Image 1 (cartoon, rainbow, N blue to C red):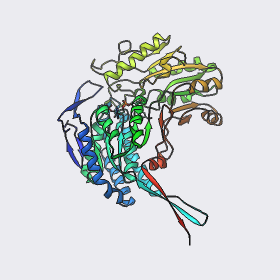
Image 2 (tube, helix red, strand yellow; image 1 turned 90 degrees about the horizontal axis):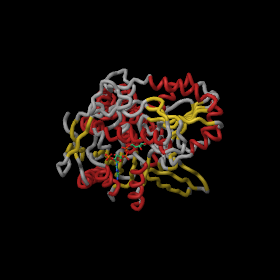
Image 3 (cartoon, rainbow, N blue to C red; image 1 turned 180 degrees about the vertical axis):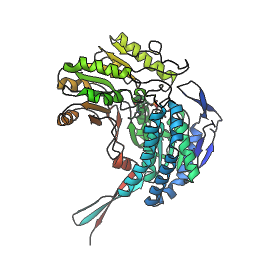
Image 4 (cartoon, rainbow, N blue to C red; image 1 turned 90 degrees about the vertical axis):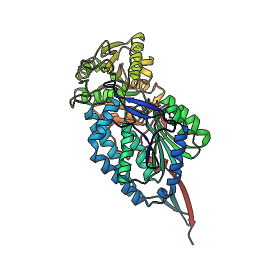
Length: 482
Ligand code: NDP
């Protein structure tokens, strides 16, 4: 595979220092290729290119910008198989998941914002004999920083609205998963997208990411990643008065109410727990079940989890691939040790050596889905974000208790409620301190809706009008009528 390069002003370039990093397929341990280990000077160059391209892009009529989004969607769609392959190799996720979610939803992001832009009309308000016209202007150059779990999907979720609103971009994907961002740059190059409007700088977070957040000419930062990194980003950007959007970590609760016909819902509950090896910020890693159905539920849940096909991501029937890296595997395993120390019982799964996945090389980062019971909801294993295939089971007696447990965490990203009575589920959902709640479903996304968390799960919302607002500056012009 060719080395990954930075994409600056429409050209593919190595880092100024000439240094590189390696990207590894975590399902085999093999080095896939190298990527630039860029530094502040590369960010400076990318920002200069973006500054130079920004005025022309900003004055390009919105219909033309929408046309570019549609062309990008078409071009990515034609290459969906390649995108899925690259994403699967870079992350260790099953090819079927990469095609269904990463490749498909990346295209959908461009299509959605193209259509949303077409439908959008700026507001006017008439009062006191005057008309107020709300005008949108681009922010200018925006910085986009994204994680490794859904690399292209989360990048395009930011790129599409940023371009729609007329901004130029300096983006940094996770150094662990640079391949599909690089592919997006190649697609842009191939279709003749205006140079300098989209720039990509690869490298380490504390070097490239930090330089983007610190750069005086980058006026907004849209960041998705962990809460600890989000704190650094917020602390750096706040004194510079940048706009910031922070989509951070979670410790989401999946709540099964007493009346839930859980046999019918089991597939959804298992998916909510273990999709992408639990490495989706929206996965439910705390499973709260009414005490009256706890034992019956546990038996069915553990059986369903044991039915998850873990193995080679390249095989169509594989449901769960590897985790992102050996380092991450070690982190998840340290939480499995902690869970046992804290008094938890492993019902299925465990550390790689306790529950090996047959046929995978020792250099690969595989874990089986792991289910704990017997932990207090205050245990660290049940409070801290593990971001891997580990779920803790907890019984509750009353709905009040379930709400209290669900809300007893620093996070507030998402949750799901499972019940036979949707009215009850809706009422219950309103008492959860989270930005997103699903009732009897999970990861069912309408891109017009607000997406984001409360508490330590983030600041701001993305999606539909919320993304358009973030990526624009609003001016109100009040015209007195004659
Ligand atoms: P990190 O916070 O480690 O990294 C996220 C991005 O930030 C990476 O590109 C990283 O670079 C970069 N970065 C690291 N340090 C800095 C810095 N000082 N300044 C600027 N950028 C920096 O998260 P992970 O990649 O480990 O992703 C997992 C986390 O993301 C989980 O906590 C998960 O919950 C969260 N997440 C949240 C989502 C949401 O919508 N709320 C969605 C998906 C994930 P690099 O890694 O290359 O060094």
